[in-house]
Length: 194
Image 1 (cartoon, rainbow, N blue to C red):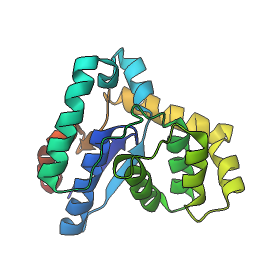
Image 2 (image 1 turned 180 degrees about the vertical axis):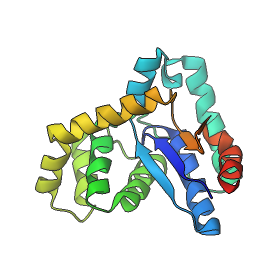
Image 3 (image 1 turned 135 degrees about the horizontal axis):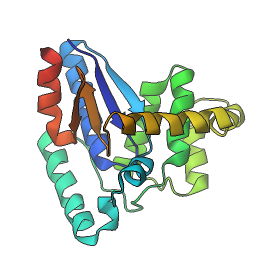
């Protein structure tokens, strides 16, 4: 098996859908996928791309498309009524979770909060309530995700991923090959098995 890097942002419903299938893949194969947090807005800015959420016809289609994929995958899913979600704090928080060794648990809960429970993570009170639910010292955790080192790390990871050719999420790099979109998972998993 080859190493799989999964580039994601919690604000992407397609990242959530990919995450649900990665969990199944890992269970079936015993392999681990590396979760690589990035800011999709930063990638779009670097690439000069307008996000589908800001193009009315695409945004309307995206809602239907995500539901089709969720039904196909037989996973819980609800398009978040507060979309687009501002994920800057969440993406910084996941870096803290990574350093404190609870990344996967945090990722599961954050994706579910947004794409299953439709929580309004744009609301600071809702976000802080979510952080409190993580069973962490909230004050210390808040200090960590607001630390300039964490902020710069997220910027660096986003810039580094763009330098690798990544322009959106979800994206995957397997065996040096880039795949974009959760609808490319079959190719990702095939490449990983080579």
